[in-house]
Length: 447
Image (cartoon, rainbow, N blue to C red; front, side, top):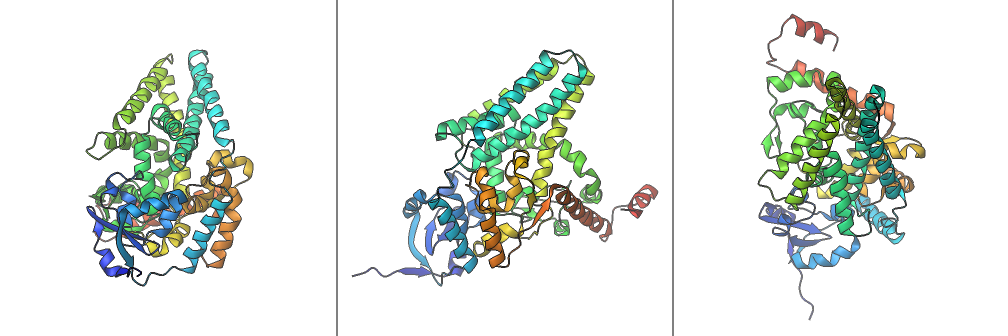
């Protein structure tokens, strides 16, 4: 006699949506992942963001088919009542299946090898430029080249965090720590913790850490109500300091991007020295210490303080290009308040992302993120495949009347600045403004 299925309602599933009592639904079956969240490779944030609801699309995006069998270990015995799938989600899942059948998730090409070789040449040239030349111009060029080197190390770190770029997991982990911690001074553990939360809650003002830059930046006036960051677990106060800084954010955007790396350094150490669970904490800290030995030592080899300062400024400023690229993909797109919804997860990814149009010979410059929509929908897809799947994504968006926003690099910068300027002017117009003086009035007159 067949066993009778047991069902729970969506309302009851929602009651299991907190740390320690965390249930999710995948394809109509309900799983208890309360304990798994503590050791989940992607961190607990993605699970907490989708807790108490269907998470099928997100699971499909992030996990290969071989992991489906492991879900049985967490099955509660319940099925979700009135489980239904939207046409958009159905087509999206079918597309993931087709790409898997075509082997696209495994076809990584030679891009990683070429990038690693280019990085080795760039790093060697930087070292030689500092140690082997007496020319000030060569020293300055080496600083700029160091910034470009960090950009490429960032792309490798990004790729290796999403999928296995090397032959095995151990070698992949080595490349992660080498490219992130040792050579760039940024913890790969911090990056995974932050970036996975961003992908799941794309452009949620209170769940996506990539939009939580108060008091320096605010992409929407909704942040003026001092929202609580569920990622950082703190209130993002919109006080007089934040009001002042945000009021000029369209002017300070590029200067801040030139020193944005300092924030990543601080965030990395903040996580590793915190009480949060961090896999391979000692290994992560050791990798950062390697960076903070070789980079200051290299700078100290320059002949005078002026060249040392300019070397640091140039290396930080050139890698600031990458920080700008990260912002272009999302700052000007649609935002919302609240946790991501499993029912429209696919739709939220398209609404919250912007592609950058460019020729194929410029793919190295953008690191694959010029296909941001494709990357968000298929995060496990190697970057060399993103251009190939773009027509399928455009067709899917057109079929379901979803946005497929794409702009040139120049236009994307214009859109980002326009978004920041709009929020800046709104910050100035709020009731109970900070005390004004003649300088304030003169500057604000022309925005």
